[in-house]
Image 1 (cartoon, protein in one colour):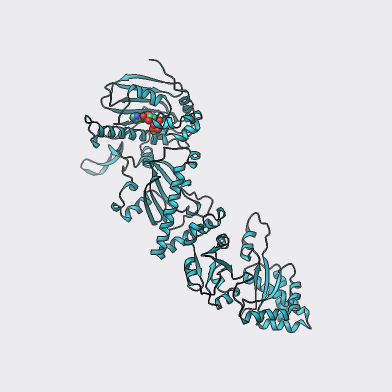
Image 2: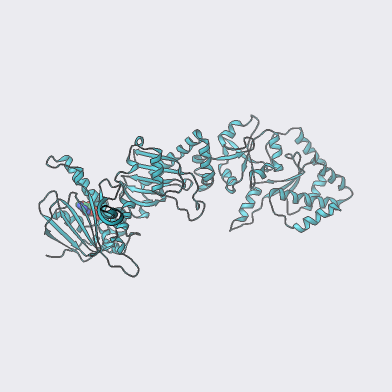
Length: 626
Ligand code: ADP
Ligand code: MG
């Protein structure tokens, strides 16, 4: 018997395999089971088209046998088997999976690409085995053959005996090394869990001898170990079942079984798409935020299956960041058993699926918002911030997808409202969508700057998340209505008599305002008569792009650029304090200076900004007391 050499490319690939391209060696079992399943598919198909063959489902199965003493692991199938020629061409040549190999002939130059492109599964056996033996008998011949190889040095083929059609692949599992343990691939429990993880939904039974404890004969108390043959996969994937057959509980159970989360899902989507891209998916929106959700540790992604076989645990490319909370899986027939991440990223099919998923998830959220407000608010409280990040990031290119999913707390409704709802309530003469920023709703409620806008009967949205104002700046407008901070220089409220009065007042007291401005030189850009205050004496507003809230956030960042808002100190000219300023201006400039400093520091406190010199501030207060 002569030893034949592998084809050059196969040899290269084998070397790569032995040095483990697969990050997890355990996937060798997935590959062998998927080949066995393919082989049964083929004989099934043949039976459909060949009158001489019948296909009785009961006779078709895959069996896994582990033998610790011999260190062998055998995977048997009752599939189509291989002729001598097929053995030669399928296992002697790399990835000879019919048409696929020819489609990608050009890329065969580079071993790594091949691994990305094909299910090069069979060779994966050499990641865990020193020797691989294949005994097979084809449906098209009476003679069985044995193929044997210890890896890179080639293989042998010889005739052998086998009673029934099918294939039996025996791996001689490697001895443990100092770094790696291979014993686990002979362990019953470990093998079961690998099957559960990757091949649970293979359509044929995967059988294995399993040790179970059973009562000894009549004695109920005493247990004994009994070995019995069990089917260890569940066979029908839930996502291939008909939606009408499934209950809400089935979906919840699946969520738990898959450990997508420890909560219950808020809602699920069961998607069957049969168009330019074909896929099935089960997606969940969790009820609670995972504890690490807003941290670097959180990894987004969906499980990716190719025709019932798991090929990736967390495929990040299926979800945009703004929907990173979605859990679940995608199964597509259009994907090859693709194991390299780099290749997946460039996969056109995957991009189409992602686009489609985004559409479906958005539609589901809108439906929830419309039909089950309470549930939507639960969702929004957990993941709303992520949507707002989504509006802000990528230069705002996803704002159209997301703007109708946003909610903010409303001054008039005292609850979360959508932008659509806000705009629909706007009075004729209201030009802008008003918002106020602050640490909490309670604090914003007390902001002096909101007085005038509220007095006009306008609604204000409360921004309490750091990202809010940044997101809204990116959005710029909603339904052609611009956003306006209640602290911005020009509120855009039509001038009424009061405004005119304020302007006149400012002119009359120009000298006083100029003096105050010089007292606060370097701290504020201007001191003005306020048009937005009613009962409060003083507040800060800003001219220009950077708001006070943005200044706070930007200055907390590690690459702090010391960005400053252009602050304006606004004085309520109707307030008694102003009268006192005016009265003192002629004869007691020192007092005016003291009051100016006090007013400025008060405005800082209201904004939640630190006072530069707290000791000086308290001393100033004492000066007023004595
Ligand atoms: P792929 O599955 O992508 O074709 P593999 O390396 O996994 O690549 O398998 C190579 C080929 O070997 C298969 O296409 C199939 O023709 C043949 N083969 C592998 N395992 C079996 C099996 N258990 N029964 C019949 N044919 C098999
Ligand atoms: Mg394969």
